[in-house]
Structure formats: structure tokens, C-alpha cells
Image (tube, rainbow, N blue to C red; front, side, top):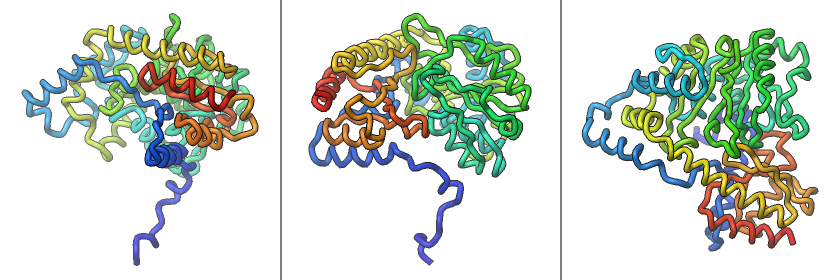
Length: 396
């Protein structure tokens, strides 16, 4: 019997099509035809990791061979202690590094594993739509069901918890939130939203999963809060954080989860069966990132803010209006007036074929992403001027 006769699992079959794979295939086709592709589809930082972090890694690997062995699955005590100190200084949140901090092979892995650790087949999770795909894909991989919470522009892309039917709320086991938000770049400005989330979670006995990957990529004086700053949040939730965006360490695969000790323990137990944790040398680089000079973070912020301004102002001159986001590395753009009748996938493919600019279709993030595209600000400055010239070609 050939392997083509053996089907993949039902869980894998339930996943929505990975639209980014479709865009990648088209990018490869365009490159093969000799087209100069400008890659703005994936939130993949293009700048190098700050040099003091790289130097720490090189020194550790060269001079400390004991770090080449299996690491501690939950993360080394030194890094967990530094994470708890960073949370106290940055957010005023007190964490026990022994029980309330867990190091992850990137936050994406941790978010997926948490769904798998808690959800039984048929269990329900409340997932905002649009969302970072692992928020719903993790639920599907666990065999769970997703109840979508529409994020609409008129509600500042915040979910309306009052609109969740009583029987759904009673059945739900998890609620995902993510601010600053990927893909819409929305932020929480009214702290009452988090208070509402805590009350809702306590009333219906729901785990809150807060994805805070973009907390340090903020502009115009905006400072992102942590969900865990809210009174009662530690009783109901965990928060995921990442080194990927803050320190341009996307390929290093290191993140962490913090919050409720019981939830962290369950995630740690699950992880101990499926991975060995993050390389000790990379964990020590994480220590260097959080304790070293932070002017690199300020510089990363400045670069993204400059790119945002070039694109938003340049697009406005072409008659394509996008709100200036206060955070993240993304623009969430409505389809141009001229192409409103196209779907976001069709428009993304058209844009790539006609101009060589790759962006993400809004429906890659959920049903309510239709009518929008996400532009990732992840290429050299002068390429944004090229991008605008190419946009002009299809808009005029």
C-alpha cells in the first residue's frame, strides 16, 4: 500500500487553506520569470539582530560547551528571573519566576500548544476574526471548535463580548485577545476593555489567552498595556510574548508565556512531552536582550514609524487612504476603491502579477478580513518608494 493511500488526520484536514503558501508559490513563479519581487506579505523583520545579542551568542557557543547539551524544558532560572523583572519594570506586574514564567520556542508554538493542552475534541474557543492564524489553527489542531468574534472598524477592532450568546459563553473554554493587534494594528486605549474581559472570563470560567508580541513596537507616544495589569487577570489568563519583533530575533525562535501558575504548569507539562525547550545559548542571548542597552528597541521603533509614515502619506497621495496605526509593523488597508469588487485574495494575486509587490490577503486572517489587505513594513527604506511607484501603476 503506497503512502498516497494513507490520509492525513482529520484535524489537519480541518485547517483552512494556508493562503500564504499560495502567495509564496506565486512569488516563486514571478521570480522565475525574472520579476523583481518586493516582499511585504510576512511579518518577517528585515533588520539584523542587535550586535550585543549576537556577540553574546557567539561567545556562549564558542566558550561554554556545556550550553550545547539539552536545555531545561521550562527555561533556565536566570532567564525566567530576568523576564519577571522585565515585566515588573515594564508593566508593574509581579510574577513568580518559578511558577508563573515559561520559556517557549517562539510564542506561536506556545499558543498552539496551549490549545492542545486544554481543548478536547468539540470544545469551544472564542477567537476574534480577523486574527493571527495560529489563534484559530491551534484550536482546530486540538480538535476544538471556533466561535468567531467579529472585529469591525466601527468598534475599533475590539470584540463585542456582550454580543456573545449566553449558551456559547457557557460552553467556551478559551478566549483569545491580541493587542497591539495582528493583522489590523488596532490598540487598546480604554483600559475598561480589559476589565470587561476579566469579568467575562470569571463569570463563564474561561481561560484568557493574551498575545502581546507587538507591545514594544508602538508609535506617537502610545505605550501598550499588558492584559495582566488588570485586577483579577492573573486569576484567569496567560500572556504570550516574543523576542522576534522587539529585538529582530524572529529566526532565533524564543518567546515566553507568563501569568496564572496553574495554566503555565499545564502548558509546561504538555511541552515537556513534545520539545526540549530553547537552546541554552539562545536563552542566554535572551538574557542579554532584556538586560542590555535598550536603545536598539528605540531604533527599531523609529525605523518602523518612518516606514509607516512614508507608506501612509504616499498611499494617500495616490487616493488610497489607510489609517496611521499606533503600533505593530503592519498597515491594514481597505482594498482600493477601483478594486472593491475583487476579493482580497484575487486582488493580492493581481497586485503581485502586475507589480511584483507581495502583500497578505485579509481573508488569510479570517472571514472578517475580507475587503482588506495587510502590508508588512519589512524591506529597505528606498524599496517603499519603489512600492508606491508600482501602486501608482495600477491605481492611475
